[in-house]
Length: 131
Image (cartoon, rainbow, N blue to C red; front, top):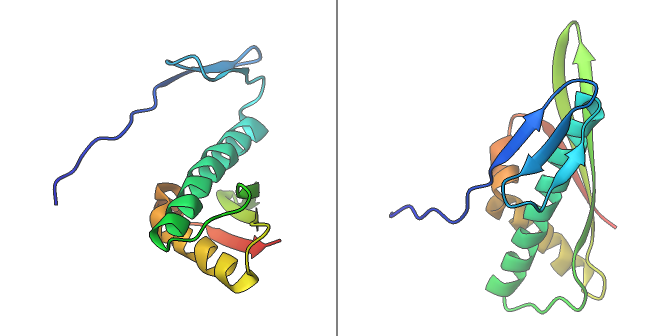
């Protein structure tokens, strides 16, 4: 297998009360007055964006036309237990205009495609529901 670099995201974060984050390409430039919930929100956005692409790829591989674009509402929770911190994730997926069994197949396949899903597999509790 020959590895091929597809994209590199570059960001700069400045912390503190007047913290901010920006991407080198200028598409993201936001204030981060507190590290949390900013970190969880940013992780949820990044994972959702990747996951939508994975759903679309899974559909294309199966020659399934998605009548509407996929939608994902993601919740990332930061939890504590005896001084240890951990994350949980909930991805609520909407694939309107498509048979429910096929939609379920696509959202399950997407977890095997999405690099964020792969990176978190076995590391955090993930619940995926089809709306």
